[in-house]
Image (tube, rainbow, N blue to C red; front, side, top):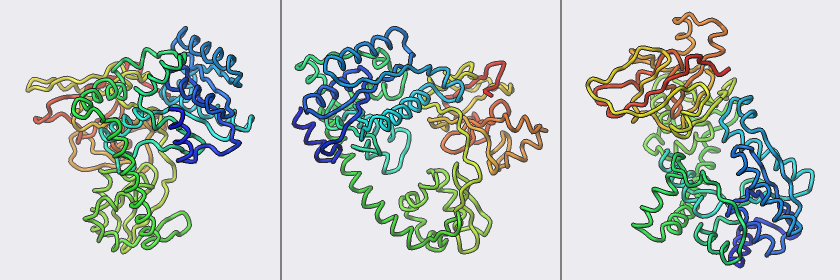
Length: 446
């Protein structure tokens, strides 16, 4: 495995002669095996361990293992304890997002202060295919099906070639110590469901599914590279910059109408989605004045032009829930669950409860503040309404508007939280399963 490790590093030019590499070491089997491989390869390294203080004594035991192992092998070891929950609360983000932000900002600090060239993380081949399946399930463009990259900025992934089984075998033969995070065995998180429930079924169909999907991802990366080259050339041909705006030839874009994949890739940098792509096709063929507003840009049809402008302010996203389990964990949510719908299904008129058609709601869900230009279909209406006008109708004060939050799915407002759901997500006669979300009595996340 050491030979393959070195070959993978060489093939993807991950480490140059003389580079010092900082290893992100959690104490789990993947990062401990990665560390052992770096030691065996004789590459100069340091280790960084984050104790997020989320699992009590287990977190402390992880830290102790890492420190003992690095001391034994004379590797510089950097350890930092974080009050992750407090940080998440102060920043009004999820614990997962808080841990990620804390981790990578600290890594950058260590790199700058100690002249490390890169940070090695221990993502393996199985992590890669789980990412591909996860992206496919959520809905993604071609780029989302290519999987993780061997390197992204200062992050390198030298274990992407190795399956989890191979890592376990190496660990056993070389008696590498490690700690097991018990949450890895739980199936309440989406990625764990893929790992423990989906992959085993796929392996019954194809025992080599890890290798097969990984190779598919590599082939799709090649296709994506060709597509990106074509799209970049096309963008340069049919658009030009004017101050902060980008001006497109609307006539040329109309001719691309039937080639939705190309149109999507052209406007993906402006946060276009599958749903807003359909809206874009409509305004391109319509009259002057039609517009599409994404989370980052405004796309306005003006005669023979499509003008792309950055929005004055990007959405202030407070929380992201990748699953119903994560939705339940939000501090202002009392409950969130699915239930079957029959003819006697009770729909409450209470503002703090949202009953939604589960088939129309796509995770991840975002909770964000409102933006000028936001529109939705208030329950009972078959046309869109500007959120600013809705606030006026509801006699919102300035403070009320500042506090207002949106529940968003696939770039659409599902619920003006605590006020009104969007008509497109309501329970209908054809609804089979409902998603019921209830706020705590003292609703507020400010």
